[in-house]
Image (cartoon, rainbow, N blue to C red; front, top):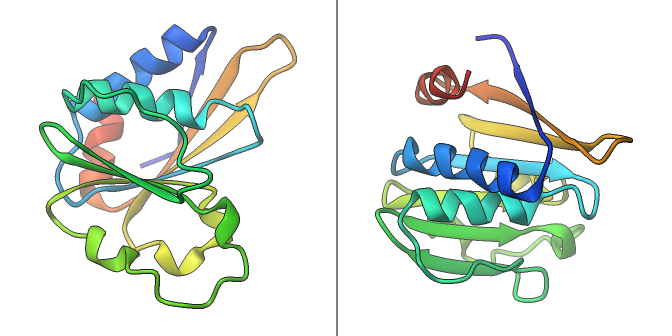
Length: 150
């Protein structure tokens, strides 16, 4: 499937997009979020959590590196920003399984965490304040998710 691009005009629209992603996500999926600071990675993840029926407040795991939330699926939220150059086993592999959904912010800093099949969402903050989300899929189950979003 060809890449998909969507634009949101507010934080609420970004969370709404995330909620749709969460509602249609399956156990075992891995979503990579890349974008500059303030692009909307955590905001999108808050929406994903809502779509997974997670009632807890979702915040960026910048300093803790990982946060886990329980809902319809387990949400494993990883911020790899501080993992650049770290070459040790931090145990994240055990969370990249069929029990939940894993969202990895700043995945370019820890490419060894990225499975062969995944959904990559690149977020760009546009000059007018809108955000452009470009979805790139590798794997059939992610193609099905994109069809729902298109």
